[in-house]
Length: 320
Ligand SMILES: NC(=O)c1ccc[n+]([C@@H]2O[C@H](COP(=O)([O-])OP(=O)(O)OC[C@H]3O[C@@H](n4cnc5c(N)ncnc54)[C@H](OP(=O)(O)O)[C@@H]3O)[C@@H](O)[C@H]2O)c1
Image 1 (tube, rainbow, N blue to C red):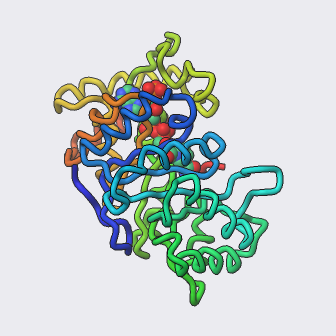
Image 2 (tube, rainbow, N blue to C red; image 1 turned 180 degrees about the vertical axis):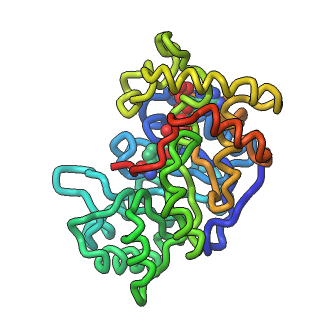
């Protein structure tokens, strides 16, 4: 496993990191979840991403339990706030920042997180209030560094220009072979300001592994077949995309890579990406994906991928 520096922080994060959206404390059973985390450490993953809202707090609780016996400085732990935790608890007001960090730390059974991220931009709270509250918790030692996810570029720039507050070191956008929205504005702005990308759904939730075949029902043991985990999957009936993804298989074969490794190496070709945050429902996926670290793709390969995916690639829009 190779490691990259996270923005202007002193954190070194593994190129492949482990996420916990919908899986741990959620749709993946306890035994498999534990095996995924254990395998992650075995293959050199040192970076774990979660959020207060994942499975209503149960992802953080699960991680708190399974990480309890590991030395706290042997891994980099990231969580987030913004999405509703109750009818009245949501957003990035000072009151929420102060409340949600303590609730996350209690579930995670730790005194600090390495990275505290704003899951989205809060249009109902003045930016100054959010940044001052986040700076307070950094100064109190509850979070070492700050990040954001899917913020509009103008708000990222505004935050960077605020005096007297901590600076962001990470950005968490959706980014993959078929979702290239961050390339236009977010990546250049971040690269110029000491902010790295840690990217979500680098496998497009499994679509880029080639497991979803055009004209066929999704495999029974896949995310698309799981009622607990498929509610954000909307491309598994796009046969044009699925056909094009199948055409990537010979490229992966020629390079001796799995399809997942090809997709992850593609994301890691971008120097502003510090880590690709994978999801995994079984430990074999963790080791398969981890082996993408250190793989470099040459220009002709990248061109071939672009040609095959054609207009299935999206360059506009961000997650809501
Ligand atoms: N900031 C945000 O708004 C945001 C949003 C979404 C996610 N995230 C973060 O990003 C992380 C990753 O997102 P994601 O889970 O959508 O990522 P992903 O890596 O694109 O998809 C993960 C899923 O793909 C399948 N898979 C993974 N490796 C595979 C392999 N080698 N072979 C075959 N199938 C494989 C598994 O599903 P099955 O085995 O069930 O098919 C797995 O659960 C999340 O856990 C979370 O931490 C953040």
